Image (tube, rainbow, N blue to C red; front, side, top):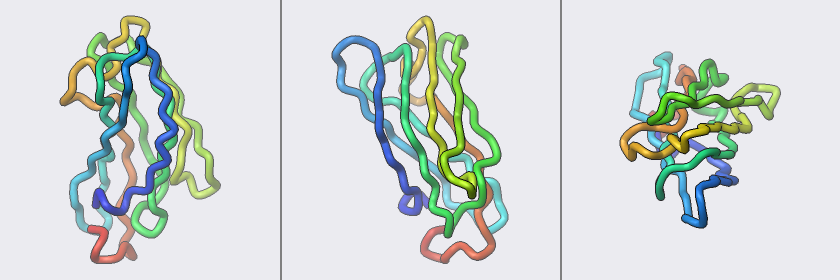
Length: 124
């Protein structure tokens, strides 16, 4: 399913001059299942992250949930839908204690979207 994710990664992470990147994972699932799309920050800890995510509308239904995570537990943020089908969102996440990305195996954000029954076999 990773290959089916369309991502526009306009990333702006603030925590000094370190370069940051985002890594995205989602497990293969059958039609009708709820996919959990996980977004990881690579390159160190940050106090804020901004990115846009767009899921392939031929594979996924609308984004049904969005959660932010930080090592320090002080995260807050907003995910605003940017399409009428609710498959894309502009995301901003903040952590006063720079807990975003501090734990490399812990995502900074997770999104839930259902795999469509009509999803192409190659995408599952």
